[in-house]
Figure 1 (cartoon, rainbow over the protein chains, first blue to last red):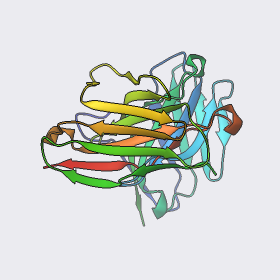
Figure 2: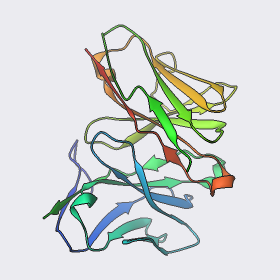
Figure 3: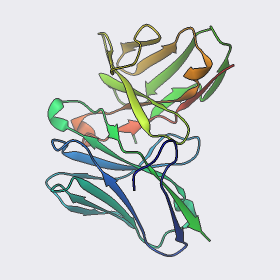
Figure 4: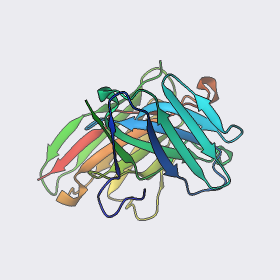
Length: 114
Length: 117
């Protein structure tokens, strides 16, 4: 969901369950998308990326789905673990601009219940 | 693998003083680096693009005279917050990419916490 004011959307899941974090991106020209995990007080950590010529990409325990029609991105985490607790951001990039600058989504806080 | 390093990780300065934050690419050269600012419980917002050997490009609403950026070499960009005020207290993060050589992977530094008192 969308954040209101300074409050990040929060997703609470039971340890072992699957998590799905959603993101709506803004630029229809964006062709590169990345999911980052950010733990408290640290910089963003790369999780997985996907280019616009794909609609699904899988990594270790993570899957990213891209729906360009509705400009929607999702991150699925299988068998969620306590160490997955963090804030997750999606980011978009338009590689045609020749730049590596990213536009970040609002973020979702994932809390894993042991 | 490629690493981007920031220094200092935490800094406290008095209101009205200036503070410099460094961003280094440790094992690759980066003609472009990016500076982001993140307030608590908010997302990262791009402040400026640091260009080696030329002037930085600032995003709308970011004061270039307050946030001085110098990209003097292919491995170092610095952000200087001048005449700092408490509202400048934030988490500052830089990013860089080795370019096509690494599949255009974008790396982030660990961030620098600035507290202005």
